[in-house]
Length: 250
Ligand code: NDP
Ligand code: 8X3
Image (cartoon, rainbow, N blue to C red; front, top):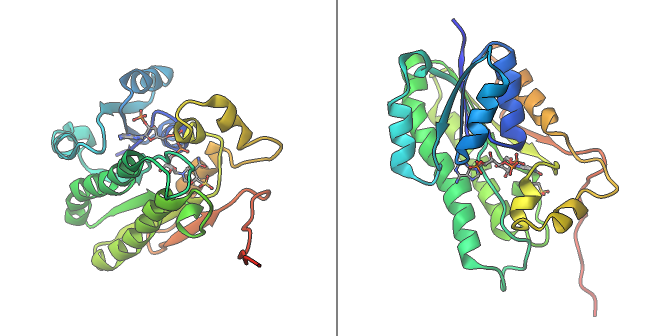
């Protein structure tokens, strides 16, 4: 029987590429996101694949739990969860940014990921089998200007992933925190609230990660033998590196 994969934020970027990779490889794929037309278009693009689109906002606790509880029989035994839905809003300094943007990042990247995880975990623990991929970021490991709350949400995701591993001892459920560097998805369009010029500039004159690089990483890890758990994996474009420490001088 084909394995079931649930991917949050499958309407774009890493989530969409991961959904495609698993779907064309014969998995049953549950794709989720807020943009119903994108979910429907994805299903229509792969008519011979097993795809179940479900539209919900990960910030809506009731919608998340209801969606998981009412999965059709053929999709209810989730084998792989890819907690991918997330966003950054703004790149301003902490003293001047919009507090609502901070709240949206916390509600989506932290609370949304928690709702989905909590709703899916009992299914995996009961069957003593499963794999959870969380989309962290290099921003959860390394500080950068304007990364304030976005990076902090991803540091939360990293620590939550590691803590899950200890709670899941003896269940065979694996957890990996995927920590990518920058990639030209819709991420910067969202961060700069539709300002395409600003978004394009982020990737100008360099080679960022392709969304398929992350999809391939997740797919490869999912096919390691069941006794192997990669706790964290940090992946940067070759042309991105850390800046080192800054010293202010008088
Ligand atoms: P995209 O903007 O291309 O995709 C984000 C996805 O998240 C969309 O499918 C969007 O779907 C979904 N999403 C956002 N908010 C919600 C919500 N409230 N409810 C449900 N779904 C939501 O970005 P990426 O593919 O780049 O980002 C995917 C993940 O990877 C994020 O967690 C991001 O932080 C992380 N990441 C991205 C990096 C990058 O440089 N691109 C690097 C490191 C990590 P919809 O709008 O339809 O709801
Ligand atoms: C996204 C990567 O470097 O743009 O998580 O913050 S970065």
